[in-house]
Amino acid sequence: MAASRKPIISGNWKMHKNHFEAIQAVQKLHYRLDGDDHDSVIVTVHPPFTDLRSIQTLIEADRMKIELGAQNCHWEDQGAFTGEVAPPMLAKLDVAYVIVGHSERRQFFGETDETVNLKVKAVGRAGMTPIMCCGESLEQREAGDAESWVEGQIVAGLAGLGGDAVGTLVIAYEPIWAIGTGRTATSEDAQAMCAHIRSVVRSNFGDDAAAKVRIQYGGSVKPGNIAELMSQADIDGALVGGASLDPDGFAAIVQYRNH
Ligand code: 13P
Figure 1 (cartoon, protein in one colour):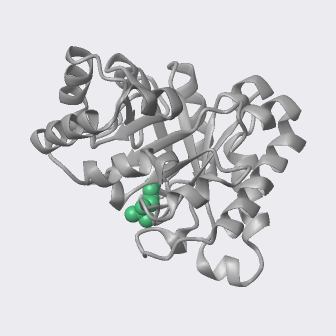
Figure 2 (tube, helix red, strand yellow):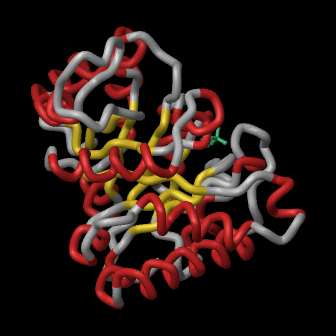
């Protein structure tokens, strides 16, 4: 992790926790983290939409430094899109980060590189930071196609953006075969792909964007493997699924410097 990029560790709760459970979890997490933790790491939590208002109120009332995130959004600001949530609605709830193009959304809900691109732009327009996900399947990795696949996702997902905008983004590399499987990429494999992603950003958006863009690794991140992942030059943080549901475990991940 380069010193100029502040690490960012994000908890993607997926479809877990109602708003009462969410309040409890964020309170516990807050008590486990101290000022040094927040000075060293940006901590974001991404609960389901139904929890956002409760968590926003809690963060504001207790002046917590935890940042609020969402897991998805639509790309239009409003309109006849039953069941969808618009970026300005999230921004109004003090949501600062929005996960875009998670592999579960690509796999189960028909997200494409084109909709990911529309969403990345819409999130930025609303003043929030996208966490754009990419990553290959096991078949693609075994066929030797992982790097070109991820490059295609990055180039298509960021199409039309300028270097300044790309420099503010977070990109999450989540190999699909490592999500929820307990099978983490080795830190060498994770580093190699994150370095590749940075070089793709460099060749398409310039040196400054490549130096600034923050790249997270995701896929079975746990208290026991975070320190080694974070010691890699191009890994600036983590997108944590299952292990983020337990506030003690997630706090231990945020405190990887103490391991
Ligand atoms: P796990 O940490 O449960 O493998 O999930 C990773 C993930 O998908 C985070 O977005």
